[in-house]
Image (cartoon, rainbow, N blue to C red; front, side, top):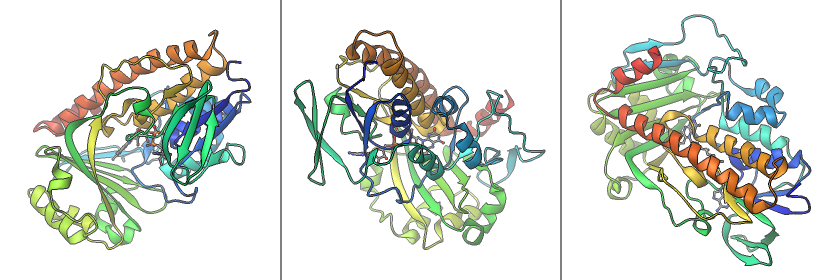
Length: 385
Ligand SMILES: Cc1cc2nc3c(=O)[nH]c(=O)nc-3n(C[C@H](O)[C@H](O)[C@H](O)COP(=O)(O)OP(=O)(O)OC[C@H]3O[C@@H](n4cnc5c(N)ncnc54)[C@H](O)[C@@H]3O)c2cc1C
């Protein structure tokens, strides 16, 4: 095996990095994951994730974790309501029984980010994840790398994999390419105890997902297993809006005023999302890596997931692509017929960049369509297919 007696450092313990760690560890590899979070109990926020048959679910099958997934996914949470800004329902998947068929390639079961992370963490040997290790930089050492972390520690590795997400600090060691702005900014939020705090939206959600579309704007709301809901409101604005808006994103009254103005023709039902003391808001520029990325392969360093090919979330592919990268890279490193690591990484990167480019293109197109005057019609047609 190419990675026999090699020390492997994965930087970033998101779904991509942890899936890779599991897949390598079951082949006997010496692997460590360096994660900046202080510990595993940090609350994982963000919308739920739907895993796809040929990518996210395939990764879990290969990792031997489908049993754990089936015990933790949320039956029925994939059911969608498509509504307009006035909350009029145009499409509803809540009619009829929940039919969950894991053999059906179009079945896309939902799981919350926290439970998915726990499944992957629990599958690793104790001590695999080194918490509180925020990667700062690295330098060549022999044929490998010396990695330096913010907490003052360092580590040596023969092979480094950057799985450190959208703002990857490993990426510049491979490519000067930077993400570009998609034209859409979102405000993301989490409401705890949604039944109590957002009763009308809780009812409309019905333990599923809402896509609200009107006047070039979107609002995506997902129910979560712990009784909270996650939402993100997206609209077209200039690249510097977050900095120039002058908003204090910890002040819910400012956010409510902003929403009332920006979403002025939307129903007041949505205001519930901005009325609770516990709601936390996070503004995000929706960025994408270029579609035509090329770089010279390194023999001891590569990228996966958002670090390699950040894309907008509007096709629901980001986590699936990260997990597919993980199983394709693991396969090249442990099962392929490559002569050396350099060739194995090169083969992985060609395949990964090609797939990511196609999917990023689809994600950019859907970002554009969902923030256009015909968004509702476009989405209804997609669901009619
Ligand atoms: C609003 C929104 C909604 C989304 N919805 C969906 C969806 O419905 N479906 C979907 O498939 N995708 C969705 N995505 C995208 C998805 O979240 C990402 O594509 C996915 O999480 C990528 O996984 P990853 O493992 O590559 O990176 P990440 O999940 O970003 O994980 C990176 C990890 O690296 C750690 N890290 C970062 N920097 C450092 C450092 N310097 N040192 C050490 N550790 C570090 C982080 O703490 C994190 O644990 C959404 C994204 C957003 C913003």
